[in-house]
Length: 98
Image 1: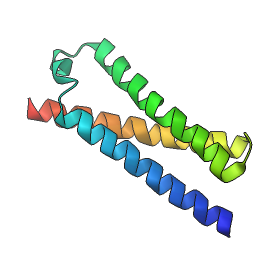
Image 2: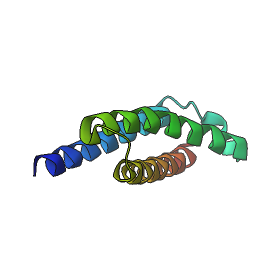
Image 3: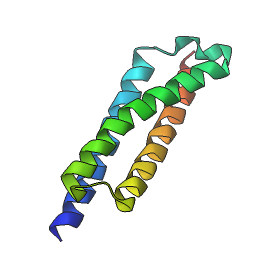
């Protein structure tokens, strides 16, 4: 029970961090030139998302599973997909702002 609760709390915290990061990226207009619809800008955004998710994945491996495991990798893929969804939502937000 304790491990499941710890895992759920970590996923909630992880998603919150991803959400806040995408919010700051959108508000500081780091991608203000995305309106030019340059695919390279999307690649930069996805690299930023992955660079945010990877350290959190490594931390979750150490906190929850104590060693690398398939379950941890599945959590990483799940969190990465959520991060990409946040990224796409905020790209849409920037398009509507400009």
